[in-house]
Image (cartoon, rainbow, N blue to C red; front, side):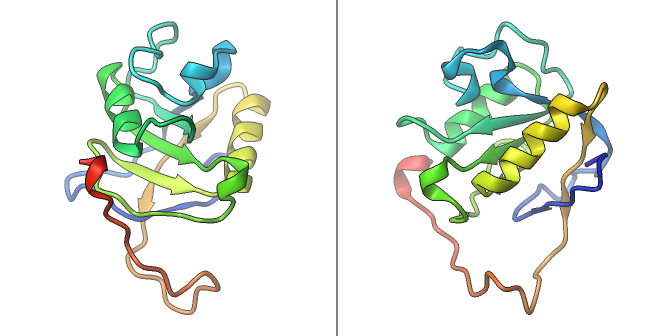
Amino acid sequence: MDMGLTLQAQLLPSNFTPTLLSIAYAGNNGKYEAAICAEGSLNDIDFSGKVVLCERGEDIGRIGKGKEVKRVGGAAMILMNDESSGFSLLAHVHVLPATHVSYYAGLRIKACINSTATPRATILFKGTVFRNSQSPAVKDTPEQQY
């Protein structure tokens, strides 16, 4: 991200080119449904070609949130945990380039978005990272998400 904030993606399509794109918080219109990227909720703001920050919430699956971002032309998604999920991160195959971040990283991303006139971001795939303090981790594949 522009302000020196670096986050890593778990899974990205092989044809994804890391390019700085505009980033927007889905909930900037003040609507909870938009913040969690509920189906049909992102019509009020132009997300075309942008990285969209969505919050976890309700019974809307991670994949469903990505489908909503893609439906409105979003280029990528950053999925922010809710506070109760904290640092628990899951890797999923998404319908667009996406990464899942902790609640606290999400707060930092929101702060960057709100304090920068033209916030930009990209998602980089760093491959397997060894000697990470959050290792080991196991990929989760809940059947109901697909």
